[in-house]
Image (tube, rainbow, N blue to C red; front, top):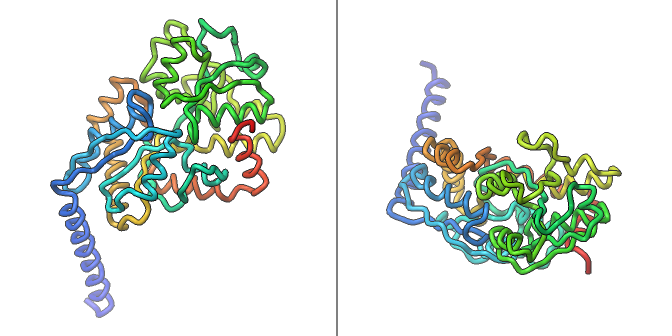
Length: 343
C-alpha cells in the first residue's frame, strides 16, 4: 500500500474513532438523566397530543436512554415557551420545546412579544407536515361555505400571540376583507373547542386537520362542525372537495402574503432546542427524532389514535425559516401588519 493510501486509511480510521468517542461522550452525558420536553399549550390539544406521543418514545433513541418528561408551559400561543427556551432554558440538551408552527415567524413580523431569533434555535424536527382548516359549529352558525364565511361576522375563538387561531383569522380578514371576530382569552385549542360546545364562540380557524381527526372525529361523523376551507399551500388528500385558501387569492400580492403565512404548516408540529447547544448533541437529537418517527410502537400508537405522522427533519425546517426570512421587506411588512389584526 502506498504512502497516500496509508495516509487516507489512517484519516478514515481516525475519523471513525473520533465519531465513536463523540457518540460515547453523548451517551455518557444522557445516561441516568431526564430531558424536559416543554409544551407551549395546555393539556388535551393537538400540540399536547403530539408532544406526549413523541415523549413516550424519544428516550430510547437518544444515546444513554434518558427519561423524557412532558411538561406544559402554555401562554401567548407558545410565545411564552419560545422566549423561555431562548433566554432562560439550560443550553445542554436537557430541555426541548414543542412550539406553535407560527412562533418561528413572529420575529420576522416584528411581534413585540417575540424575544428571540428563530434562526438561532436548534430545530430538531416536525412530527407532521400540516394542513389547517376553518370550522364552524353547526348549532350556532348558519355559515355553510367559505364564501359565506368571508362575508359574515363569525365569532372565532383565539388564544393570543403566535397562535394560528388568531393569526390566520387576521390574515383572512386582511386579505379578503372578511368580518370574522376573535374572542380571546383561551389557553389553547382544547379550551376553544369547549367554548364552541358551550356556544361562547361559533368556530375556529387554524385547527390542524390531523388534530381534528385525532381528537374529535365524532364531530365530523355527527356533523356538529362544518369544515369551510383548507389553510395551507396544498390540499390534504382527505379533503379533495374543500376549497384551498391559496386558490381564492385575487392578486399576486395576495398569493405572496398567504404563501408567507401558511409556509409554517410545513413545520406543522415543530420540536426545538435552545440556541448554543453542543453540535454533537444537536446532531444526536435530530437523528433520534427521525428514528422516533419511524418507531413501530409510535406508529402503531399513532394509527390507533388517528394521529397523522409525516415527519420533517430539523435541517429542512431550518431551510424553511431561512427562506421565509428572504421574502421581500414590503411583503413581510404588510403581512406582519395584517397578522397583528385591527388596532
